[in-house]
Figure 1: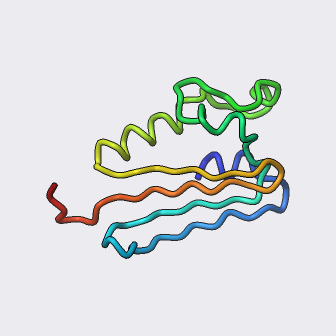
Figure 2: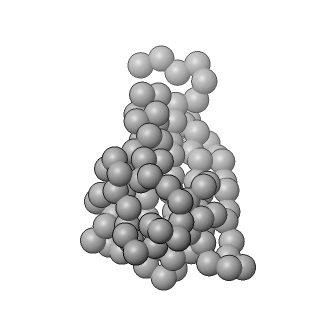
Length: 104
């Protein structure tokens, strides 16, 4: 949510959706209408300290740790995180977790 707000354009939208998947898992989706992430950077956004655009790092506070921490937490809870983005159009992050009471 923090990134969706920080990297959105003025007057942009942030959509949040929580639903149950056909596999009976919980999916949390955050979608924004912001700057988007260049395709060359998508493979690295979960790396610690990675910042997509070094020039805007001075304008937007952050350490580049947020998504790597989220990914670790999601994986420790037996979940998955996926990101889709198109530069200039926005980003969608989907977190899928087992529902409460799940035992592997």
